[in-house]
Amino acid sequence: RVEGDFEIHSNNSLADLDGLVNLTAVGGHFWIVYNGALRDIDGLTRLNSVQSRPVPIEENYYYGMHVYGNDILHDLDGLTALKTVGGNLSIQRNYSLRNVDGLSNVRSVGNDLYIVSNWSLDDCRGVAPLLGWPYGPPYDSVGGSIFIEANDLGCLSQEDIFFTFESEVKITEAYIGLLGRAPDPAGLAYWSGELQSLVASGQNVDIALKKLTNDITLTPEWIGGGGSSGSAYQSAAES
Image 1 (cartoon, rainbow, N blue to C red):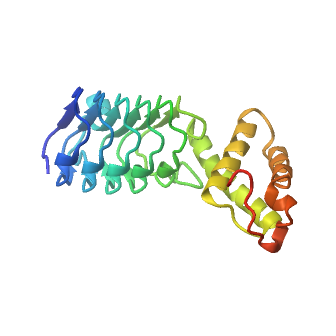
Image 2: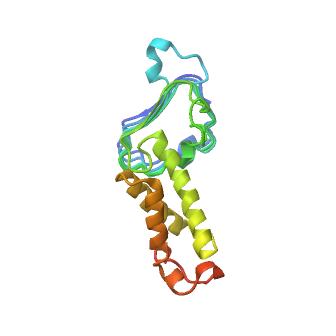
């Protein structure tokens, strides 16, 4: 445990945090910023809380947990034990980050939440519980404001994140109705992404869903007589 602040800052040769495997808590702020060679943070798998001490209001932006400017960091899987962040939780400008699944067990953020300018980030489902899915505010667990923007499609806003879930439900229902089975992960991701893209381009969600339902009936599984008979054929998206 670190009682005070802990900063991992501008270490251009640091590839991982495996040496921190026994770290369970940071009493002050915890920064992981500008580490250009950092590939993963899997060494933090026992970290459960950050910023347990009071936060001065006039300096509150700097307190909490910041993961910022780590160019090749691709996930946050090392944070799966993290439950509480007393200050801000800031995930910004990590340009290779693809998902935030590692935040799926965070149940409380004391101040603001920032998920901003992670240009490859298209999967933010990991923070849906924190955002109060399926209702959103005031059922979220963020004490301050929520900033989710300038990421990739699927993580452009809180509404975008929730629509990802809704898309998966709609595609699953369409699969069961047409093919008599749920989609496999690859098919679900493909068709959900197609639905999100159509809606993002301005199409009404119901019209977009009808288009995709028609497209599913043009796949080899449907054409091959799969329908609701449970055929072993796969759709083109899943093959």
